[in-house]
Structures are given as C-alpha cells and as structure tokens.
Image (cartoon, rainbow, N blue to C red; front, top):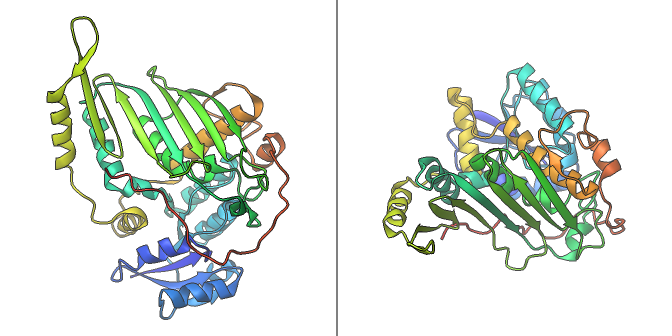
Length: 385
C-alpha cells in the first residue's frame, strides 16, 4: 500500500484524487497540502478521505512516511516542490506544464537521477483510446510516411479567467494558452512524430487585456523527414473543437477518429482507396480499449512502475521535450525569427528570467482574485468519434 500526498488543493486536484481512489488496494491518500488550509480541508471532506491530514506547508511532509506526491500547484512552483520531494526520497507526479523553464526541467531531472526516484509529468490525454489507437495506427506503417501534421488545440476562456492572481503572467504561469492548454496536444504530437528541427511562430492577445501572455498562437514546423506541421493554440475558439490530423503519403487519420485514403486516376486526380481505408479501420477496431483512462490511466501507469520497476510512459525528459517545443514557439513569436532545435542552455529563453526578459508582454495584469468560487473546469473535449 503506497501512501500518497496531494500538493495543492485547486480545481485540478480533484482529478488526481478521484484517480487515486480508483485503486484503494494499491494506494491511499494520507495528506492534502495547500497554502489555504481551508481548501485542503474542503478537498478531504468532499472526497471523504478518512484519516488524511491537512498541511499548510508542504515541507512538513518531507519527513513523513509518503511514497508518492501529486504536485497540483501553479506552474512556477513545480520545480522547487518536485526537487524538494525527490531529494527527500519521494516519488513525484507533476501536473502540466512540467516547469516554467528548461533550466528548471534540467534541475528536476537531475534530482530524479540522483535520488533514483520516479518523476512523471501529467499528460493524461495519452491515456485515452483515441490517442493510444492513433499512435498504434501511425506505427503500423499502413499510412506510409507522414507528410503533414495538424494540431488544433482549441479552447475558450472568458475574460475573468485571467483575474486569478497567478494566471496570465510570465512570472507565475510561465505563458498563456500555448503552455497551459495546448501542452496536452503538443505532447501527443511529439509522442507520435518526434521533435521538429525548426519552426516559425506568431502569437497575439485578442480578447484578454487582463493578461500579459498570449491567448492565440500559430506555429509552423519542419521535421527532419521533410514533413511539415502546424499547431494552433487558443483560448478564443468557441466550441473547443480539438483535433490532431496526420496526413500520410497513402492515407489520412485523425483524433477524433476519421480515416480517408486516396489513389490516383490516370490523370493524377484522386479516387477513394476503399481497400486501404478498410484495412486501417480493421486495425483500429481491433486495438484494445483501455481499462483506465485520463488521470486514472496515468496514475495506474505510475503505480505499476513503482510496483514492478517498469518505466513510466511519460518521464521528466518527455516533459522537457514538450516544454522545449513550447519555448521555441515563444522565442520565435517574440523575436520574429525562425528557431532551430535543440535549444541550448546558452539560449536567452532557456531560463525563467530569460523568458520574462525577452517575451512579448501584451497587457499589464491589473485584476487580482485570490480564488474563484467555483471549481468547475474543462479538461478538453472528447476526441472519440
């Protein structure tokens, strides 16, 4: 039985708590920590976490009998909290984004290496049938080489969303929709395609004059294979219609699931390739469903790693790779220059201080709210057909 602590009692903490509660024979939540103790107590009461204690300062937990912590705090705190727990011999699961800078990612990964403890970064969208099946279809080779990838990370957030004191700032949140919303889809793109070699990006703040950061960005990518890609990150798209589309030389597939294949007529115009479509659909339909999805799927993966010694699907290096692509988008959009990868420690955007110094500030944040009354949040649309 593994003892678990939740660090941060904000809205996302319920997703973690509910996931852990699906495995009562494997783990138990023994503590919830938050700088606002009443929020921690509310979480314990809400989820009926019998025996769990409230802790205002997470450092009190460093010497307790705890095996695993879920870090659910604002992004700028992820690195120091994770490093403290890793150095104390605890395993750590960190909510997205991994950290506020690539330098912090390096420090977190080094702490995990030195301690020998597990570090995993939340990317719960991987643990959904559409994503797992799409990954398997791409790996099958039936589509031929991928020539174009399209990511539409469309979300919508009202103006007051950025009134929360830490949101919408380069210092505390580390960025806007590209970092804190599209991170899920960017992780999936890298998982399926690998890293691009270069990109050009643009960003804007069209609808949230109470935020320093972007609410819309577009990036154009080039991969070493010659394939191209595009990522649109947004919190201004009504309907939140999210999708990933992969165009192969032989066929097209996507999440939400859709398959299309074409063959050439004698004059080069397309005609449907029904046989290939049926072959790909047959593969997709025969792929297994997941026993646990979303946060529960990832926490099952983490618990299994701790129980068996197997590697986690998403470690700290995968988390850094995602942040590196996002940092590249911010660098390109702020400097109006093409960015090539990898980004080196000497890069001006490698550190939090460098990002704050060189990033575009769209507006000065003026509204500050300590907490919202409601915990209702959206975690993304259903990518099933």
